[in-house]
Image (cartoon, rainbow, N blue to C red):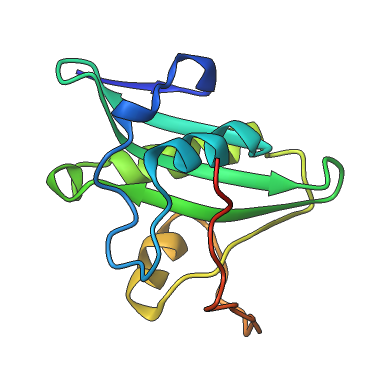
Length: 136
């Protein structure tokens, strides 16, 4: 059974394995938990039978005008089952009073977001590939 929650106080770092697939530098599970706890809003999907987080989406915001959705991840075994769609719909419900809800994605995921009402716009980004996650 998959349960969705916005309550990060119930999430433990041990439940956060397998994420950040393909990342050059992955946060450890303790850092991942801090990312979730420090986000403006979060929705997590939990497989209660396995006591494991199987997906999550984060939102960061100024609290008034704009929201940015930096992370949407679903573990490979749970993809194409509606988990990602449900996570996006739930975070949109949490942030529906904002003017801007933005995200960056690759070409392959544009159709997924378009089905959920997002528009494709040109964007600019900067990445610091020398970044390291803080210790502790």
